[in-house]
Image 1 (tube, rainbow, N blue to C red):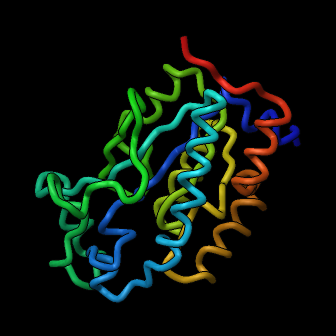
Image 2 (image 1 turned 90 degrees about the horizontal axis):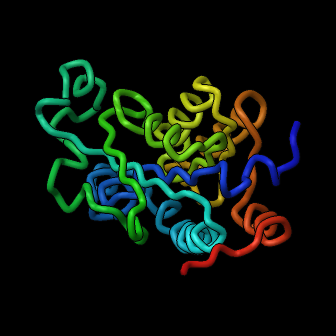
Amino acid sequence: MPDLSEFVKPSKSAVIVVDVQNDFCEPAGVAGKNGKDTSAAQAMIPALSRFLTAAREHGTNVIFIQTIHEPCTDSDAWIGRRANPAAANCLKGSWGAEFTGVGPVGNEAVVNKHRYSAFLNTRLDSVLRTLKVENILVLGVATNVCVESTSRHGYMLDYHTVLVPDCSAAYDQAAHDMTCKTHAKHFGPLATSDQIIATWAATHSVATTA
C-alpha cells in the first residue's frame, strides 16, 4: 500500500465534507428531534474546522456535500424507508439544510445530493475529474450511512479513499466503529486529521496566494 503522503497529496486530493448540516447535527434539527444523539456530531466540528483550515493552507481541494430534499426527489421508496415518513429532513431552502459550524469558502464546490451516496445522480464525479483528483478524504455525518456510502461509491469509481474518523460522527459509537473497521479492511485506510495534517506539514509546503 502506498505511503499516506501519496493518498493525501494536495494536488491530487479532495476533502469531501458530507452532510454537516443542521438537520443532522443540531439537537434542534430533524435527527435530534427524532431522538438521535447528535452529541458526537457537535463534538467533532472543532476538529473538522481545524482540518479544513489546514487543507486550504496546503492547497487541498475542499468539496461540500449538501443533502437537499423536495417533493420531486422524494420517491415512495425513499420516503417509505423512514420510521416516520412525515419527518422530512433537509428540505430545500430550510434552516435544516444549512451547513453547521463549517461551510464553503470562496469558490469551493457545493454538490447537492438526494440519496445516501454523494456520487449517485450528482455532479461530484465530474467535479473531481475536472480538478484531476485521484484521492478522496471522506468525512462528515453520519459515518455509517452517507459517509460510508460515499466512500464506498468513490472506491468503486477507482478513487483512492481515506476515511477521517475523528472528523466523522454517527448517532451511536458502535455504528461509527464498525464502519471504520469495515472501511480499513475493504475500502481504504483510516487516518486521523492530526495524522494527515502532520503529513501535509512534513511533505508539502503551505499554499500561497498572489
